[in-house]
Length: 428
Image (tube, rainbow, N blue to C red; front, top):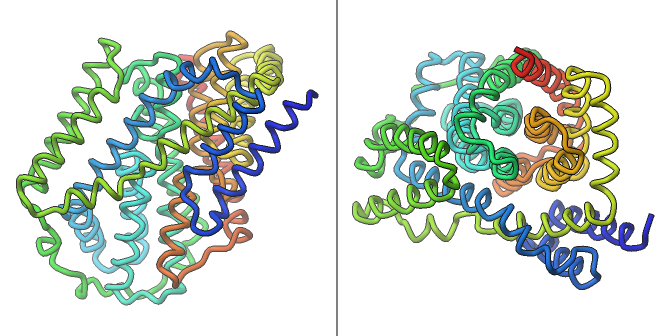
């Protein structure tokens, strides 16, 4: 093991520590950028590879930022709050029905508006609903943790559902429709098995009174009627354009960014939404985070990590497609839980390509890095955002010990069910 390889591992470990701890409320994108610059200065990542790295990350990163801006505009218009209140009212005051419906809502939002968008939007909405309905704060955890869990585990059906998916589809040039054809069924299994495991875990705690009469009138939360009224047709139209342009090999950002800009323009004209605030609050730090992490990970791979993981994947492929997909998916998931899923999926993609293995492993890499992060609190950017949004309220705190206890119980069964379904889909 070379000195530069050891140095890359140390830089990576320090970067992840700073991202998780955020000393002095340090922005989540700064440690990776600093770590990436150090990797370039030390020669861990060759300077000439920066253009290669940018070509890999620009499409996925700007797509995610655009999707989140789009989803934030819909939330500012009151669309998601309206839907959430309707779901709770439909439950008729039943805590278990409310629990199930909110998880289903989370899976839908994650699939259509990305896991980070679902986390940013749904966590404060659920928190607000629980306060309105008179649920004691000790009963908040099952609802909030379930939202945090489902946002990641249900984020595999479409290319746009997770930054992990976008990065992988871009890297292997997988079209929007081709991706969906393979991943829709595993994604449904992931969402339903997540719901089943969450209900099994918390069913005894769901015995509280939910006063739905104290909820606001759904119509009263609508702030921009124009944006609210076009939310569904606009989203359907975007999905159709994603599918069509995929056949033409047009980068998905060329659709997502203009879509977000168009909705910004509509919102600005109506004057009901503070569009400047939405743009300022957009997660621009994801751009720095993604670029910086890829520079660090590319350096780790260049120094030997890619060769090591590729050798493991080649060895597993010798046991047939079932073992290759399932065990490789478990390996990717463990890497995601330890390293964070963005660097993990990047290492996985580089290793699969380096080994020249089947593209089916790319889908296993996606599943491992969508679901596997739930083993630990540092596993995904969405989880870090979720923890931050909860702690910002100052009333609820979920310890690492509790999170990892719950995560280990929930994640493995969901992961195995989803990987098995992927194998069935690819074997047919």
